[in-house]
Image (cartoon, rainbow, N blue to C red; front, side, top):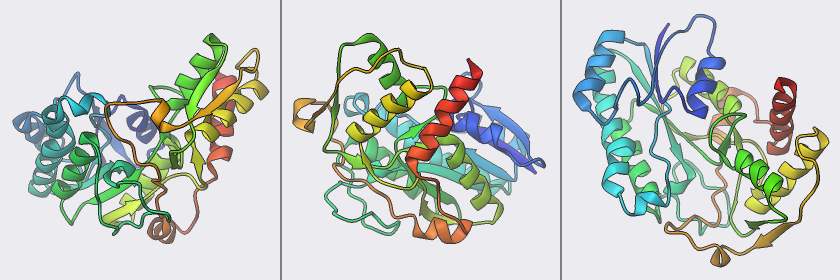
Amino acid sequence: MKVLIVGGKGQLGRSLAATAPDDAEIVSHDIDTLDIADADALRACVADVRPELLLNAAAYTAVDKAESEEDVALAVNGTAVGAMSAAAREFGARLVHVSTDFVFDGISGVPYAPDAPPNPVSAYGRTKLAGEKAAGPDSLVVRTAWVYAPTGGNFVRTMLRMMGERPEVRVVADQIGTPTYAPDLAKALWAMARQGVTGTHHYTDSGVASWYDFAVAIQEEALSFGLLDKAVPVIPIATAEFPTSARRPHYSVLDKSSTIAALGATAPHWRTNLRVMFGEIAGSG
């Protein structure tokens, strides 16, 4: 099975390559070898590779910066996805596109179902919603949230650095969602793609947390694996105390029922996966 991964050097792209089925022949590109905002270059790449699967792990993810350069974010998160979808149809590939909980406004009190009405409150969310629409009904679109991995830029690694450098850390406690371990997300994407699943679905780890809860767990696990020398106070704060350019959804837990049905299994709890990741970091030195 020939597979083209775009965004191959990001944490999800690397996880997709690491968890690929044995029969997958992977061609991986990132911004240094393929500008997905260049529709002609993208089409030429798909024409050359002739993949059966096109996995889009690329995204503009600078949430606050997108407020001042929404056109740049849209080129990557929206327009490029339309070009991928067109190229996939032309050359017989199936597109798998990854989206975000930021397409919702966060005012719900219950987990968002895949068919819940989107209402993004940030430029980033608007551009990701545009990408979902551009992917088309024959594609697989999987929304996820709070993705982390042993490598790359993510909340876990940021917290580890700050806890090692500062006398205390202050973390927002009134934004609620679910962390997602990139390797498990990758495995779910492979499984759903192999089954030919289409439409919009959700995947995160199981459970619910605030960013504060997540930070407290990060410190506890890091200490248990000897990755931090000492504990520092983790102070819960309100979103209003940490102003940002972009609004974040206050509640963005995703309903994963359709994905559980497709996979025949639930995802591990986020705390379990966090422990798995720290074990990998400790084991690698």
